[in-house]
Length: 254
Image (tube, rainbow, N blue to C red; front, top):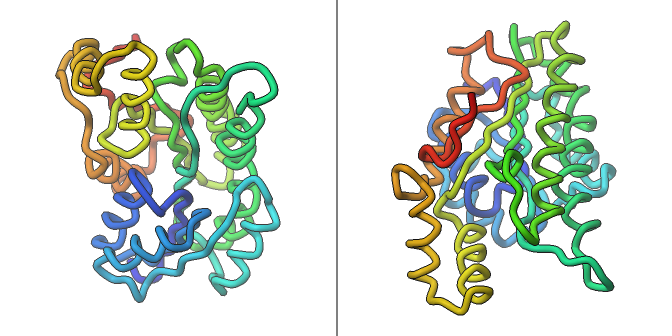
């Protein structure tokens, strides 16, 4: 795996950090992007092979920021790309509406990331190259107050399918994961907001949320990371344009 380099965005915390840890254990070289360099440094220290990883502070809303990070990395080619960076939370119409922020980071930032990385993916000699988007169960569901988040994550699925069709002739496989509740800081922020909005305790909010999940639990970040590793591995060369749901049964689409 030493000749295979994977770029991961949003690698400073949560699912992104877990993905970086898992890929490092498998021996991949990594380029890790995030806005908070301190958090990226903590991620790098947690890796099995930290010397095989480079970290760069980058705001994916700005394509030149991604371009600069790739240039500084001196990487010649990329085997795979994990488009994971994103923000959550509510948005409300008015002077403090977060619509633009959420859409620009989650959707436009994902588009920028792919476009800036494509030249490097095209140079990689592997028979199949991989792009994996991190969407959400909320791409498939409507939640009051989460118009920007739901729209951005649904948009990512459209983006994924379009890229899958566009890049299939170059053997670049493009897919998306849609996690449900995952035990991360973002999930707990959601529970805190739910508790505040309903004037209940966080423990009550958790029980209420898990009552809608058949398996009654959150996923672990490592579970998402291991699915990611499979989707990027040489073990699969036939899955493209697909959305894979990891939600403990919370949504069972036909």
